[in-house]
Length: 270
Image (spheres, rainbow, N blue to C red):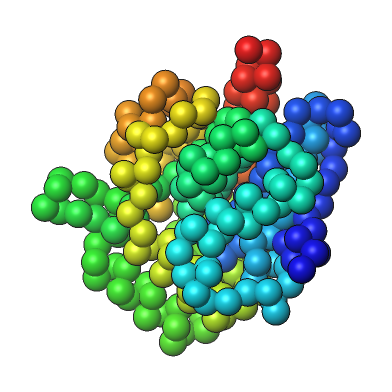
């Protein structure tokens, strides 16, 4: 299988610039980066892609076994890097893709040279017995998964929760359209891999420079969660954007691009 076609790989920006590999989150595709691309293209070589089964990727290459865990998505990342001959890239992972980047960086240290974890959450499910609040109770997760499997109208209520800004209904509408375009079977499998995974134990093993980038208010990834990610990843840097919601690349693209540019630029100057 041609990896470029399988994952709808798009390479743009400055041909000789440092590489940013942009990875979308659950239920989405590479269109989520459309506002960041113009702000970064003059300085960086940008590699965008859709996970197998998502967006304009090859649906026939998808199977539930491989993509039933985050390791399957990390394998996509590894294979894209190998296909393009990428080394020492800065991986920018949104939401659950932050943890995909963590996995990929641990197995491909020559390929992934640094990480930008955009609104990360290593475990969405609360663990009350540990005093951990991931943002979703067991009931919340069960209701979410049931809705994804039985209610075709799920994008209409989930998109506003993710955007988290009632004053920007156009952003919720955009995300709703992306959700609606997603393959229902892929969404169900991806959702279970996202919301039932606990990646906290993987964080201390990260050995590359890491930026934890969050918003001031996020219902999907509470501040205490990004505090934990920052604390558990040795030497990581934590930046809070003056924005709300779980998609700052849409709601605050200038601030998001600036934080990515400053971090990635500083890493390359070392």
